Image (cartoon, rainbow, N blue to C red; front, side, top):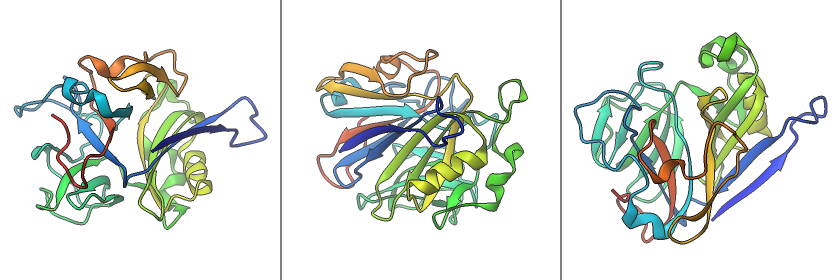
Length: 250
């Protein structure tokens, strides 16, 4: 249901590896949880701010989300709660009540419709129609980088033709090179998530009950138990599905 692999995107940089996780959406539920600071201040209840204890028996993976609201205004909707209004045109991960998952440019209103369980936006599409978008070549559009470097740790999430998700993290990437990696992986649309060395994280679990958490993305700024206690930033969790379109654990 979650498969991982590592490869070298460029022979010119043999020491640089891309970390890829493929998520079978027909057998999993992807959930979105606020942290106690991210995506940003809100009067709405923030939920557990970590993986709920009652759902850890079916936890498969956790990974980083997108920018703070203060850094890039974007929509955030989960557990029937709209923390920040949706912004037309922005890249959006959507989970529907039908059980389907998609990534697309938002074309709806400020609040998701009744058929949507979760929606998280971050910037514009990085890949569309299986190709890097024209904006991908303009590094300045994709967030402030540590010390102003063009090539930094970047993460992204794509969707393939079958509606499965693909998470990618890699160091020393520009927006264009990250989009090229995603295109080579045959995603049809993709969105950038967090960037810079502090934030990339993808955790897998060896057994039920969140036992044996392990960092798939080797980042010394993160620890494997990161989302098993209250998190600073919002994050995604992947669970074994009980039924299509069920509510996420809360």
